[in-house]
Image (cartoon, rainbow, N blue to C red; front, side, top):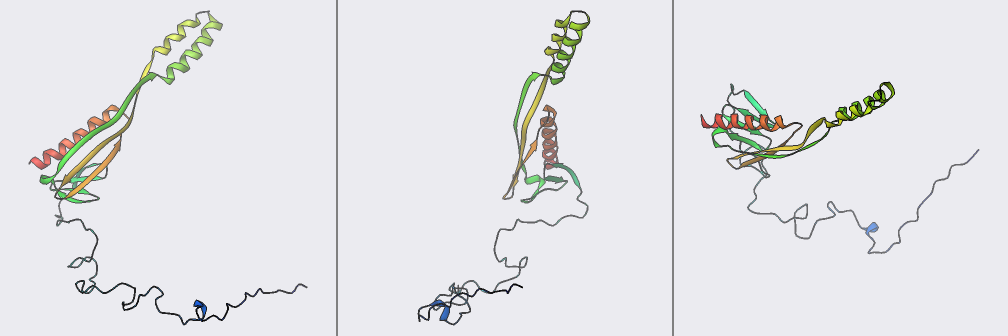
Length: 192
């Protein structure tokens, strides 16, 4: 049977300047003549008030307007929601009449040989050469072209000190048209 042994560490030397022999302080970072926490008291700070009560205790809080009960979301553009009276973004609410919109097209469209055309050309060349010797007719499938759209459409809205930007991925040229129409709809709601 094995006997279990426990390892013991040597005790620190009995030096008067050794921190192990000092009595524990309640706050190791406390500075002389300072309250708990090590920071001098600010006479102008006053007592802490819970979050959400006036006066605000710190941090930035977006200005929130009261929400009408019948203010339904009419449309969304990315993470921006539009109602009849307000634009709701993660950065805060903006009255629809005070909103300024910007649409930036950051897409890129390329044109190339379609993948279907390459597959059909290879298959027909192999079949026509073996069947009737007219394999070069299959090369006409290489004239098939396709367009690929990549990138994003950036939409920004600002007003009353709130600014928000969102990126909408574009998979076709119609995405740009759709986003622009949605922004024009939001602009028309602000003009009413």
